[in-house]
Structures are given as C-alpha cells and as structure tokens.
Image (cartoon, rainbow, N blue to C red; front, side, top):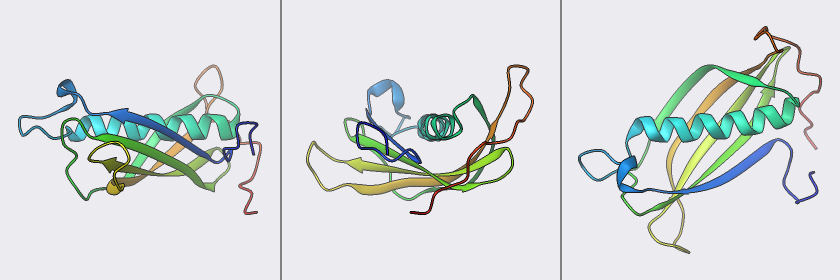
Length: 132
C-alpha cells in the first residue's frame, strides 16, 4: 500500500473526451482509447517494477460500448501476473455520461509490459505479485 492509500499493483487516472479525441461519429477514437490504456498499463507496471518498462503485447481488447464526446473516462490498471521480466496488466476503461453518473465498462484488455535496463534489454522484475 502506498502512502496515498492506493494499492501498488493498481493505477487509476481520469480523462475527459474532447473533440480532438473523437472520430467522425463523435465518439472516442479507438486509437486514443488504446493510447490511454497503454499509458495506464505503463504507469502501474513501472511503479510495480520500480524501473522503466515497455509494451511487449496487447491482448484481447474488447470495445464494449462507445464513449461519447464530453464523457468522463476512468482507467483502472492492475498487475495480474508477473513473469521473469514481464508483467501482465489488465486495464478497464469505465465511462460516465456526466459527473457522478453510474460508470459503465466501455473497453477492457490486457497488456504485457517488460522491465528494461538503460540499454533497452529485458531485466528481471525483482518482486512477485502479492496476493494478500
């Protein structure tokens, strides 16, 4: 547990969908959703590993519901598996039609992040996933 009360194996951040994030239909562009999800995976994996990480793979990205212009999205990323140098991160993007409205699952997926040294070579993740 960090000093702010958040779990070290989880990261959260919030974005608002502005016009430059949207496609011609006025909904969140899929590439922007993936960029935000990858950012969330990077944040939680780099904190978890205590070092720089890179994205090795994204798996099973499911776009469940369109997110409209002006909606708020919360990205929740959790480390769900740890290998020698890799971490599997599950990311959910939740949307709110307006502040305080019920959140709905808009998009979900998994990312494999790899810990690297200064030269970009894979290095071991020094800790295991605590299942407390």
